[in-house]
Image (cartoon, rainbow, N blue to C red; front, top):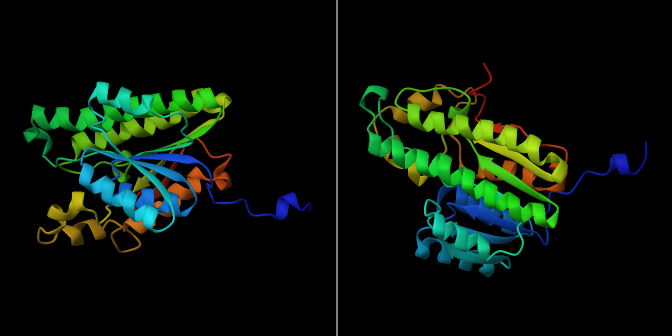
Length: 255
């Protein structure tokens, strides 16, 4: 066996520029920290300046490189201005999203618009705009954050689940189109992760137990469970992986 076939590909991303949307908290924050640790210069993007400025300072205090970029990605002009300030982008973690849990028969138009505008419209435009930068430079990786509910359904999650099914389709179709341009498009599908977005629901009696009962590994996810998958997919170790979702769901979608 040749030496080339015996060397484990690197999971480092030294010298690359990564953008993480929704970086102020939860999964986005964890991904930014992990990518910085793996060697990337990280652009942390969110609407709340204090959160991302604190995050950028934390990354730099640890010896990493980071830039805070305040942007509401549902604002087309703000999004165009933010991306217009980037001359290079190697990795996108398309993470910003939200969920408003409502039974299907009671779901209101305001909630529908909020979820679709952020989880679908903005996510599409972020991926498209990032891909245009990557196309100009000849390479890149787009990592969309999907969900268990991009594979299965759940009561009171019809809008959110529908939005994540869109992310699944977007990932596959964009990957096929961009493959010849040396741009990979992949997704990560977390199960229920203990983040601020889920905190209020986890405080409800029996809710955590209900979720855990669906997970064969018997526990909820932590941010640390997700970031390894993101760094792997961003790295040279995943060089031939595109158009698919890496599930981080403890086996929920296995049956």
